[in-house]
Length: 80
Ligand code: FES
Ligand code: FES
Image (tube, rainbow, N blue to C red):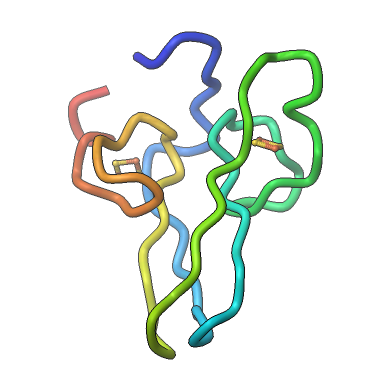
């Protein structure tokens, strides 16, 4: 388990990413707007991961917050 991280859910969130659009993936697990940051990380020392898609695509963003391939699900949730 990553320190200070809350498991939002033990499965990924489906996301429709847009080319060149910035996304803020919640890394702390406390957001009310998963998979994206809503500022609830304040005071935890954790920060959202900012990323930009290189094309329009459907992606599976990590919901357990323990992936080694942030922000994408890498299957780690199945071992938690
Ligand atoms: Fe989780 Fe911002 S609310 S990183
Ligand atoms: Fe986190 Fe799959 S939801 S690794």
